[in-house]
Length: 212
Length: 217
Ligand SMILES: [Zn+2]
Image (cartoon, rainbow over all chains, first blue to last red; front, side):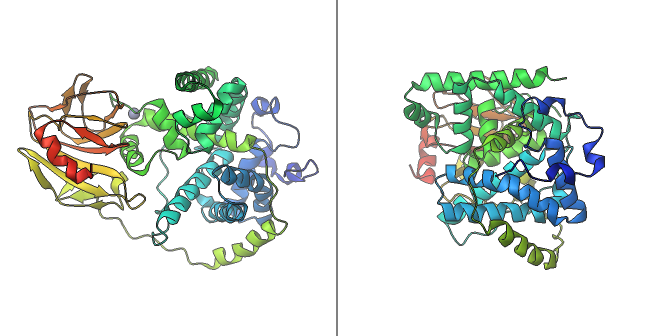
């Protein structure tokens, strides 16, 4: 849990606190929630200085969220904690691969957790399989958007969706359910799931393209 | 090079969410390597995953969780950083294949009909994956089929045409289960493509029926 009393705001180096536009996030973030810029600053401290205090702050913020993420995949609580640990150790180990121009911290950690969940499934199926592939070389970013800005924009766009659209997007990201199973779970026709998904995605794309 | 035929938004979202099966994910990854537009869309869908992770309800961790991880950082720092050896190109009998196939078990070409060869690709992540390489001669039709799930085809070299247009190297053909289509390789050369099926294929032609045992239908 990220507590209101957390010293995170005091921990950011001035270089990251100053000069970055925070307007997009401030309207949707509760005061105690670190902004994408603050998170990027912490991540850079981990990458450059191997700063354990910065790592601990990232852990306190993302650890409990990652636990919920793994629990959503019907993984037991004990295993979920192990996978949180594995995710955060990977974040430490591969910190130098974090590229703030390419992705925000939440996005980058999401992709690390996603890959660890896939590997976990693979290990369950065949315990003898090897550890994951070596890290790929970063791809080039075509748009000049900074990762932290994109994270803020996407979060903002997400809040602009209807509750129904958000529910479907969440189920698509946090469960292996097909659209048919999602329809059964929500008690709505498959066609409605398909059209809501399409509408949600069109809406998100429009909102994101609207951004300056 | 800019591509003409792309992955659908739903597929790119599933790829970003990590819910696309291993074989289609490899075919999509091959396309992403040659398509900046789809890469940008995947980046957006990954950011959507990041936003959902931020918004998720936190679950308290055990009291020792943070200290346990901090204690493990010492071992991490002591571990020597191994420099990975330079990677050999991914290929089949001298033909360069997409990087996305690295780590897969690529067999030899096998004759499956006149002007048509196939190699079954083993996917370490998923022993049940339906992933194949097809090499089809100029002017020849690809096996006539409908399919149960979505079919993903990446064009490695050459080109083929069906009622949706001409598919060239780097393009991705994504065909839904209700689509029947009859791709024919263009006459200027043979076509090599990488194909993944989500569900089982239903073959109708003679050659198609020869393929069925290979897919275990
Ligand atoms: Zn594309």
